[in-house]
Image 1 (tube, one colour):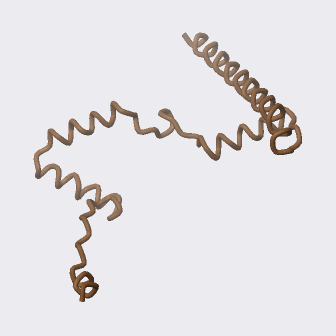
Image 2 (spheres, helix red, strand yellow):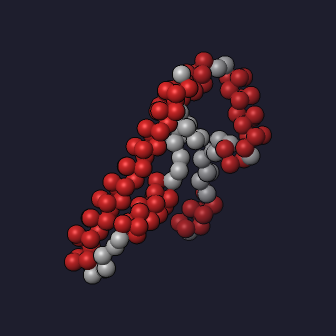
Length: 125
């Protein structure tokens, strides 16, 4: 059983390395084929393409996912909606107050702002 997990781990690591190499070559090829003629930049090497790929992952993709702190997706949301709908009004208020105590006022239910009637009467006069 342990050998199976080791083989799977080696296979996943190999797949990851191959994917990174392929994506880097794609970035390098697209950069070198399009950008020098369009905006006049220099051609890039494989390592520069790898750096651009990593930088774009950091800036635009982040390092999050279901395994590292994701919220569980639609099933989790649906489960929370079902739990909320099954709560009594007293349980809902208790839940809200507990989250308000844990997270502070930024997660409290905000009420709609009141209309300023004094400003309207001054504008009309």
